[in-house]
Length: 247
Length: 182
Image (cartoon, each protein chain N blue to C red):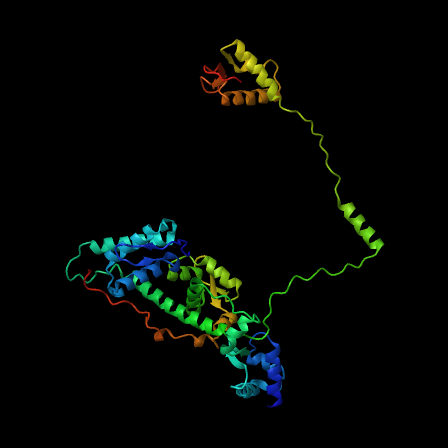
């Protein structure tokens, strides 16, 4: 993943500018830090490098970049391993930095090759071969040659392929929100509180239920009434709002 | 100039890519590759210094290329344009694949320390690398190698033209164990 952070940030403690977009990854950044500190790559001062690495990636808000975070975790683990006590003259001890150093050297070698390849490509780009061509424009479609019979036959074939349309008759059933609003407002005028069944009226159709429900929500939004449901799945109770605005 | 050299000159002029000795030999089957090589040598001498183009051995073949000193002028007139530069990420990936081929995506990721899938897809699209085989092991991963266009954009004769790893200042070696931590 290439880093995406753009703004360079001055690091006060070391006084150099780290611009992350120019690094192609955590190994590149590590090599940069090592060069800045002029330390021996085979004898990494891991605590110092780990701290610098962490401060660079946190300064730059790179916390999103998993590759950098993974390297940060690896550095911290090595740092912790270096702190573990070990006996003097312990031949079994394996330097926890060895794997990282191997990868860094390998990567450094790749960087050197990158410079070489980049130079080679640049030199090559200065010589042109035969046959340079700008991309051709799109060719116009070939002129159509066809007589009337062909056209009619083609039209018939196309028409024959059209399936019989399936027709549905859609009956409009508009919601009557205005009517429901008026009915509820009338109920509110005469009663402080009433239930859902009264609001929706007798023998309510689906459209009535929907209209009433939307009207109630709308009136509740306008603070004309409050809606409550004393128990789960119980009937809704509609109460006139104490401070009613003119609806 | 001998007739074969003239024929090769015409063929190389007509082609827009490097032609291999084998391809050139197919022009006149009775001459054979050694005859072609001799004619190429003659042609190269003819185009020695007196011409604006020269005969270059590139990408396992031969091609007429303009001389470097005219690049800027030709480009200013927009008769031809330099190809886009490869990004550092692309070059890193190419370097790894060139030296480790055939190599799988995982190994490239591992060496670069970042996910290289998108970069490799682009390189495949540009024809600079290709799947050459499948590896052993889990999922039989696709293994990639470089292509002739890779040699072409770098101006290399063949992969032997790449620097040897021993010639680099960082030789790849196991670090010597460190006795004391800091």
